[in-house]
Image (cartoon, rainbow, N blue to C red; front, side, top):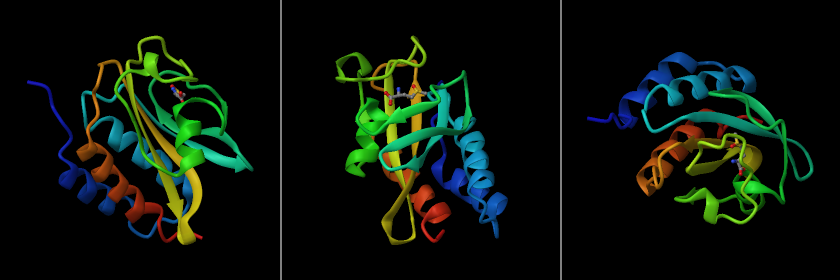
Length: 154
Ligand code: SME
């Protein structure tokens, strides 16, 4: 049987691991690791950081190497950064402008990461080698974890 993340347990573990930590890289690295290993569907898990107006740069991740730079007008990550909304892509080949970092990727979930005042600081990108791997339940549970972890940062 395949294992789907136990999001309540994941959130509790992350709360314990990151308590009192406010360093962005330390937080992103810990979340990338814990989220990645919490679910068999996740084949690449990582952050792209907003480093300049309309520009994303790779952050902490787990999995094979990712593209280093993604402009806001490209890819699923760019669409998420542009709109500030979660992107659930059941079939990456049907998504115009999808950036194929790994040829094995079939579906993706990308979530915005907001700091205080809804400042967009990054996006969280999760890629699966399985088609149609992600649900709204995944998006909601992970968005809650991101809000709890990053929502109060300056
Ligand atoms: N597929 C993403 C790019 C990032 S990687 O796959 C790690 C996209 O289209 O935004």
